[in-house]
Length: 305
Image (cartoon, rainbow, N blue to C red; front, top):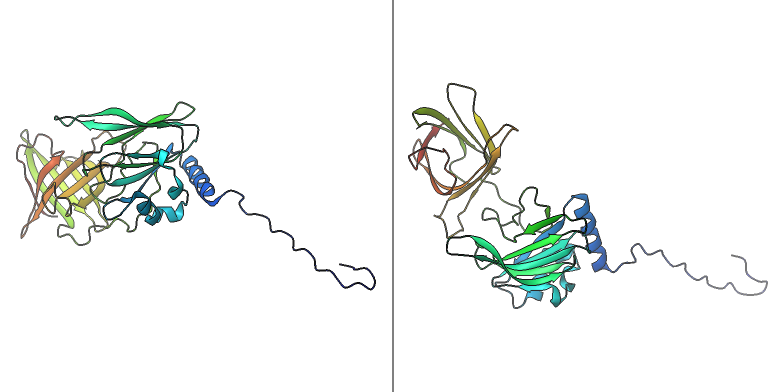
């Protein structure tokens, strides 16, 4: 710029740089997550932050969680929005809409294994909450109910999958998992039953052909039908080896299968033992659905296909 005659140039004031984001970091990360939920058409986000075992305090766990690096608002959730039930699993719920209504209750089970909501532990708006719960891997003890301003509602039962340790997010539930998992789920490249197997069984006097195909990425196909017709049902899904779960025999395998086409058919969920012999694969049910409805024998023996 020009200066007056005989005067030394005056240093110019540096122009302030425009702020890229005037929101505090923690609020900005929350807003971005809520925007992501809207993009995913999800009513609520859920994240597994870790297990309290090995930590001196809940705040230490949250601060150490990989999720807090991505979403810095997590360590600043106030104590009034922390719901503690017996157990050591720690989750965070983030409703899409701050004006939603969120209620958290006990989730009780009776001697028959039936679940029902118990007393209210928390009731508030759509702000993020921390949940501490679940003594057992298979018996959740908290249930949340979320209602959005438009009337959309959903129930949330925080729990982890037995197969890979990720949050259980049922299809069409309105939930979005924003967890930061330290390790990706592993496939089945180290199991001894990979490949294709087939068996023929008699169901109500009719021969039924069954085929199993296990792939190293943890996916599988199950075909079942009359060997003399083309009326074969095809199910696709995943398998997981439950080698770390003490409730079932070591090496038990979980099948999660749904119909591969839009045709009518039933999904299949079950836990089985898979025993590989010299030339056979024996599949025996432990829990859940049988491989064949109406098949009297508990075991089904397959041959390489």
